[in-house]
Length: 400
Ligand SMILES: Nc1ncnc2c1ncn2[C@@H]1O[C@H](COP(=O)(O)OP(=O)(O)OP(=O)(O)O)[C@@H](O)[C@H]1O
Ligand SMILES: [Mg+2]
Image (tube, rainbow, N blue to C red):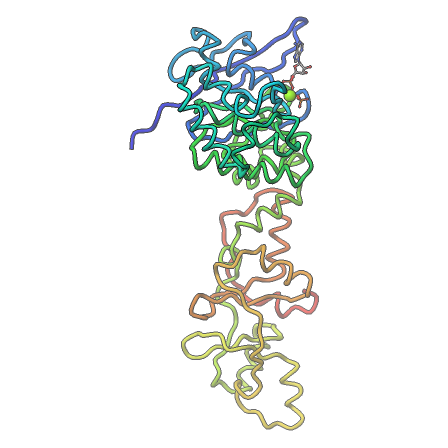
């Protein structure tokens, strides 16, 4: 499939104000159709400036911006803004226009026929789950959150190529805000919109963006997908902005048991004698053994405790005689997120990992989890090498 031409390309774009103050310097960025780009950074880092250069609300001092192959410097700003919509902070509905008129401002500028505007307005109001008769109301007759919804659909109404949103949800309570984030994200995905969105809020950026652009002091520090940003923050600044807790959480969200398990755990089959079990424990310095049948299906475990209990009456002779069948197990595809808590908080030394057919594949140890935590906090040292044996070493160590 031929790659589509980028919608916008920024090449070494700078904006220098009087006195030599560079609001942005040497910004390079490519915006493709369907991208949801979040600009994030500290106050004064140049987010709004960058965004406003895109529809010529601000003229760069140097560099060029190419819109569909054409330098925007050569495009009439009014024409350009019919293609690139701008949502000001807190949406700003026009109070003396009713909702219908508000929603269809740009289509009106574009001289759409009345029936097309009507149909569009009705389609959009349905999308945000507001009743159609709201179109006749005035902004003051809507709640704050409802007004925001109208602001969002107004931005979508004209089918513009690109929508610029500068902290549109800044002043909202968390619940309304979350609802609107979901709305914008789903509309963007369903309608294949391209959006550039400024935010202060990393959670918002991680949730919405296909690309996050981190800015500091007028420069791009890192531009990457949310996943990439979380896995490989470019420097301390980005790391701080993300926050360690969030990195850990996000990593746990995508890491599966298979990725961090130790393979070839020490195990024994049901039919073996207790003598050989004791010998194996001694050799491998472990205090528990996972027990499988001859086809590797996990059946349970035996531990020193049950061996010791039995030693008084010596009735048991084989592994199956003292088998504990109650065992917490996870599968290879289990996300660490869903098991880390249990392992760390309940003080389990490890949990066995089985495949879909309950065949034993490995174990996730407490120390592998702890390693993951350190990796995230101190950087990526051994991301590539998957751990292998010595299996169950931690399981046996008393201090683990
Ligand atoms: N008209 C202007 N004249 C001089 N300096 C300006 C002008 N507009 C913006 N700046 C400066 O440019 C820098 C970037 O401003 P910008 O508005 O892009 O920041 P921002 O990242 O959007 O910040 P915030 O998160 O606070 O909205 C700031 O240091 C600001 O003071
Ligand atoms: Mg700003």
